[in-house]
Image 1 (tube, helix red, strand yellow):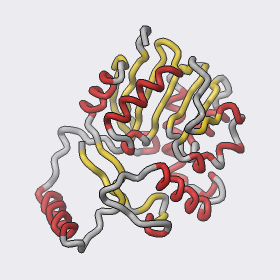
Image 2: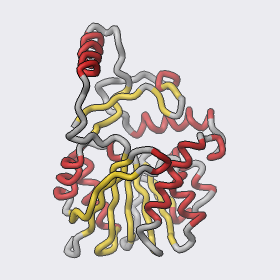
Image 3: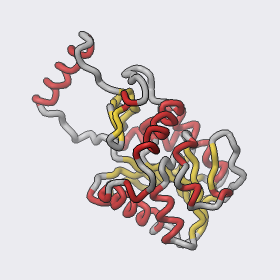
Image 4: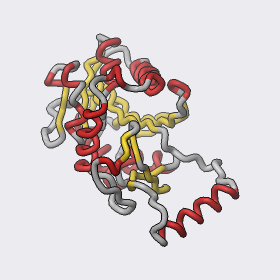
Length: 247
């Protein structure tokens, strides 16, 4: 597991709406402030970059391809573009969303029925989702908390249903840092101590496939498969777990 840092997102510098911290993990308040700034710069899905939307579109197609019909829940859905695509293009799927920063759900509220949008703090009253997925959100959650969340999510899942984690942040054991990169990291570390360089906002963690399998096991999920896909040419790691019958 490796800490990761970030200074901007969607072209919005974090310093434009607050102070960055390389020690405190970005929390729900941080994300709420970010999305408030985001919606000052973007007015609709049409404003987003085409390559970003292409990647999300193909990822949505990949998920939809795993189920012919049923209920799907996206945890940490953010702007919910993938979920919009699934709702509009796959009528046999009932798509639900939830995000920890409710302000991020502004656009999707104009697309999905109200009863398919779930705000944190309001218990989800459905217990038969066929697929629950987390797309590019787990990196922001500490390991112990993630295992607890995955355990809790199973209360909403149909027996033998799938839970899928997907992200672009996974690190692989065969990935070796070059001597030049190691030197750069050492220099950055020294400059950070001297307060001459800012790492940026503490953004979360990069994990290995082995760590994800371990988290699934700790969450009482049966490992089904994992691998790599390239929606829109962007490398994504995915791992699939199945809810055990006795959970």
